[in-house]
Amino acid sequence: MAQVELIMPKMGESIMEATILKWLKNDGDSIGEEEAVLEIATDKVDSEVPSPVAGVLVKKLYAEGEVVAVGKAIALIETEAGAKTSENGAGQGIAPAMEKPVSALTSVQQTTVTVQPETQQNPASAGNSSRFYSPLVLNIARAEGISMDELERIAGTGANDRVTKKDILQYVEVRKQQPAPSVTPPPVKETEKPPVQAPSKVQPVTITPPKVEYGSNVELIEMDRMRRLIADHMVMSKSVAPHVTSFVEVDVTNMVKWRDKVKDRFQQREGDKLSFTPLLIEAAVKAIKDYPLLNSSVDGYTIIMRKDINIGMATATPEGNLIVPVIKNADQKNLVGITKAVNDLANRGKAGKLKPDEVQGGTFTLTNVGTFGSLMGTPIINQPQVAVLATGIIRKKPAVLETEYGDIIAIRHLMIMSLSYDHRIIDGALGSTFLNRVAWYLENFDPNRDF
Picture 1: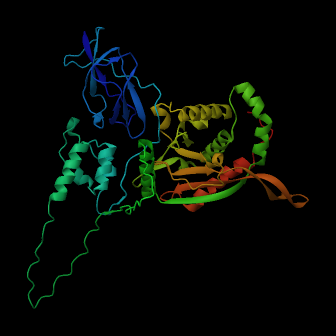
Picture 2 (picture 1 turned 45 degrees about the vertical axis):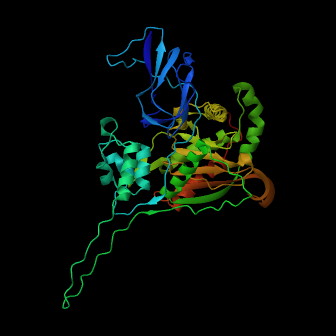
Picture 3 (picture 1 turned 90 degrees about the horizontal axis):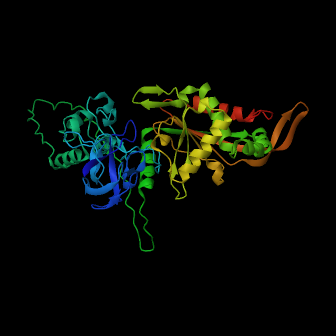
């Protein structure tokens, strides 16, 4: 008999810890190889952790709701197979491979909206510190108005003196109990005028939602975890980036007629349905190449220009939640490649079978609100990106066309597009120019092209 340790797996480059959501097995239960033992959650995804061996669950080392660092043992499994162990009993090479499908969501962080004073260093700038801080700790620090200098002075009990959630919450409680220091001004002589006091430093202002009166004729529905993460991410994005939205109406008649002409042949040859989404993504990628600033991120006063063009496509799940799978290197794919990626990611996203890396690394997002019958939308930027494109429903409408014989009225396929962008680095001129460039590519669609 031998015991092996079930290790908390690494879910991504920036993921250093995960929360145990639910144990699927209890002490004493038999476990098959690759059978799910527990469910975990990070800022980015929910996942099941499978057992690398067959055996019996001897002991759960953490309870539900606890946060565990990546690489730590979370359970002991007894197996009849001879498993190699290290001198301290840690299993060798038994961290479960996270290639199993997981339910996915955009990178999300829970955030209380806090306006930081200019005189205080924001904890979000922890990248300048040699000490690692998890997203959860930084969010609590922001919410409580704890500066980076103050955060550096907190004693940590985690690995390498890392500040844990427990550490910072204890510090917050002690901080609240300490009375504000009282200052007695010196007596002023009658012949002296009181000195002119400098204006006091601006204090952090926490925005608190208004209290909601329930009444009697109501039904209370608790948000599930995914909906909570979405809500927090949306609030965070609106508080971080000043949003501006521009609109344009596009004549997509050539594109619509071309798709109607080739869609059956496309499906026969490629085995995939050709929707409008790949065509819209293709046009967006071309415009990003023309205006690469739309494919960037903002870190303080630094602009990060992304060389890879990774397009996130907002996808609704049957439960009404939202996920954003990412088409990596979309600029290197032709229309067939984009179509296959769109269909595959959308289908597996709706079924909750996406892998962690398939919802990370997006640099620009497209949401097709027209699939739900909307004329247009004003989407919220998916941080840390700087823009999101929304496409509305395509409708037949009368439109004025300019011809060599004069203006005529004709029935055309028209669509309204909107672009929400971060006004910190994208002004109205650039945002509108980019949006019109996407429209230009769609309106000048080649009706004789092949796929």
